[in-house]
Image 1 (cartoon, rainbow, N blue to C red):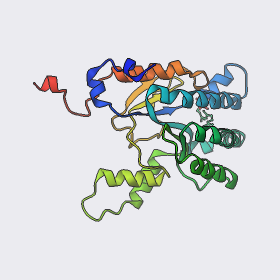
Image 2: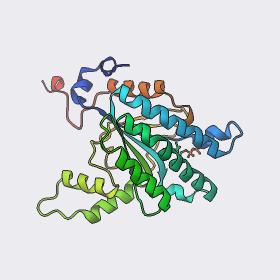
Image 3: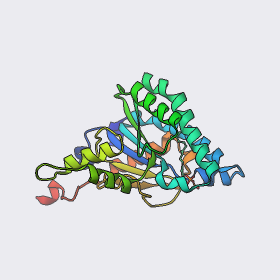
Length: 249
Ligand code: FPP
């Protein structure tokens, strides 16, 4: 599907000339597995396949930045076996996908804290980021050990404006706090799995994001689901707190 096909709302088109920043809370892996009498980690494994599908589909849908919530800072409280299986999955994903991402112009970036990873995972992250740094087709940000509240607090500690504080300067500190280059704000936030909450994800960057909730469990999420979310986004009217020119007269 072409971006122009999605763009039926002229007001939305006017407000959205640049590639989209889409963020996804990938929820429902555990329930997907439990419903099939499988261990939860089987759901995470299928979830990793859905990540691959989504990364492939994103550029075709006009997405320039894709931020995926893979592991929240609160997820450390899950059973140790699930945590270590998830860490193993991130490790495998980075090992398997880095070369292909580099070939396809996908820039990988892991956002969040970095002081609680194993040295081996940290090495994979640094390798993936370095070897894909030139990518300009898609900026893929994987949020691992991520908490928006912690990120805001770290940014506040780093923020030492010389003159009048500006949002742009604070945005730079926010990026620095999570090891990310400065990115555009989130345009569209998708949450799978049927719940409707933000779960400490990108609280600053989603100030004007459109929210899209689907009951689809993450392992079942397909290109068509992403296209439907993007289409819903283009059908919305974004006003950013102002009013449309036509209504203003
Ligand atoms: C939330 O579902 C999902 C997670 C905590 C892990 C997300 C991980 C993946 C999608 C796979 C690996 C990712 C990469 C980047 C390789 P949940 O477990 O809370 O599901 P539930 O609400 O059904 O229990």
